[in-house]
Amino acid sequence: MLNKISLDSCFTDERGTIQNILNKTFNHTAIITSKKGCVRSNHYHKQNSHYIYLISGEIEYWERDINNDNKEMIVCKAGDMIFSPPNKVHKTIFLSDTTIITFAANYRGPEFDQFDTVKIDL
Image 1: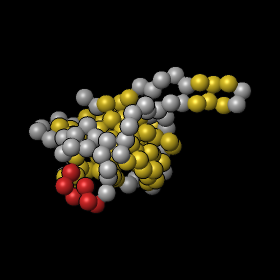
Image 2: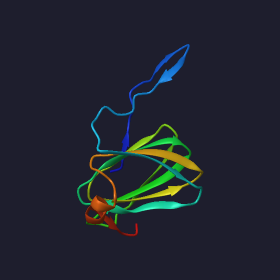
Image 3: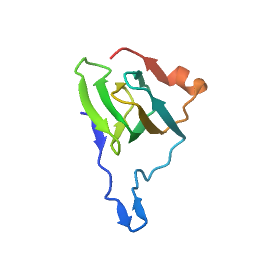
Image 4: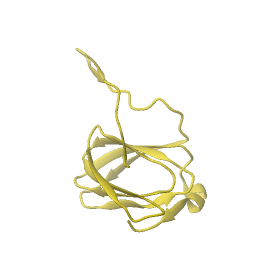
């Protein structure tokens, strides 16, 4: 089952709004911009997990367990958040120019990703 995260209600006053998105500790955060039509991910993580929060744009987020071919898809737009646990193959198709921010449990970088990230077509 896809893990679309429900966010708490935002605080609003005459100055604007505050939307809390996560209250957890992370070891890696990244802002990623992607052009309409591009595909990212097509992999799974052996140990790592991460949240994806859409700042702007729209995506198709695909996911399946590494042990079967049952795919699920959800369309997400600005303000939505998804959780990607370990051992879930995931793929992101960008339906418009999009900016996302990711929050990962473990450090992301060449030193770690070469052992944790497994490329696979979804």
